Image 1 (cartoon, rainbow, N blue to C red):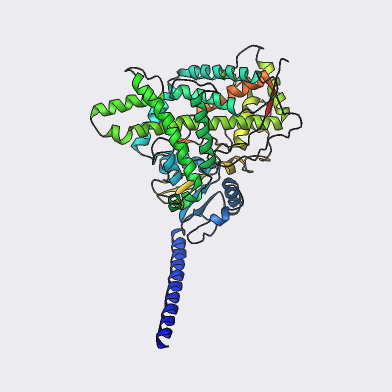
Image 2: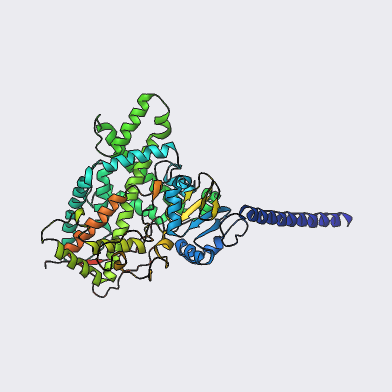
Length: 507
């Protein structure tokens, strides 16, 4: 009997000890959180271990963070797990961090998903700030500039693809057609000419493989965000991570094949495209005998940079063009006004040129309004403070993750009247009808981490949209409602698939 009582007593002592340890741990965590945040921006009170994850439930992240800004101000802090994240929701403060103090916030976070995408931080998009990133940024920038002064060569490539696009749409004879594949084809061919010096047809097996793995990555990246909050979850069985890895394996095979083809055909002299430029830099670094080639210009570095340019440029522009067409289906009066403007400015068979942007302000304003209302990446790629800095009146310690909430910036009622309403006229001077500059508008970010392909993307959006609207009327299939403008949040915020009837305007 005494033995039984002794055992029971020991069990109770163990339970009390465990309970005490848990209480002590929770109190320590709460004290640590309070101590760490006493000089930080305001924000919702985090819970131990999980932070503010429960506050994010119920809406897409950019929507929930915009709602928080109404309570806590234009700069506030949340915690994803135990990781502090400063969220900037104001255009002036965003420019302060991106431009004025751009070097302070040029870092990138190492997260399980982005490490998978970037071979553990290589390339441009997800590479941390440092020498390797600067090398690849410079090589890519020079490759994008090789099309010549005034972007004439790039304009010619886009115009050639626009001819193909309108020919393809014409074959539909006005029957319902999903624009996803033809838009992907022409945008993909523009960026492929820069990266690989070649173009695809929609039925090409290689191109269909590219479409497949891109769709897979868009569907998986950002879908299971918990593995970026709790990295140990990535080590457990996870269907999303498994699918992502399969898509990345296919991606690497396609890109490696193209890189090896270039390695066999490249000759000394002027590089033909981005792959040639990277291979040339790799060969020169190896000839110098230093560690630069191995450390910054390995085959894995080259593959990752090519993917950043090719995959990023293809998916973002295609998605924006799909948003433009979706909004025009919702607003046929805007479509008619653009076509009337074009009819006044352009002769019947004149090609549309980039120089026509100033003469077609309403078309350009419509594109900007779509970019405002549906930024492709509403929260952009998170930055990291590489040194102690500040935003507005708040200190931002080194290592803090920083998010730029483009959704909040683009829907800021202090800068835009009725921001939830689609209204291209907000970008035009009421007296002159010409384009207005500035505003709470930052679709391509800014500073050293701004989009390298901004000029190319703007050219594509203008020329492709202009050619489609010059040649076709966009109409809904009979009995079909306009496509949803809600969007699916992920690595890009894309509309659901939809059909359009492209009716030739000369019919």
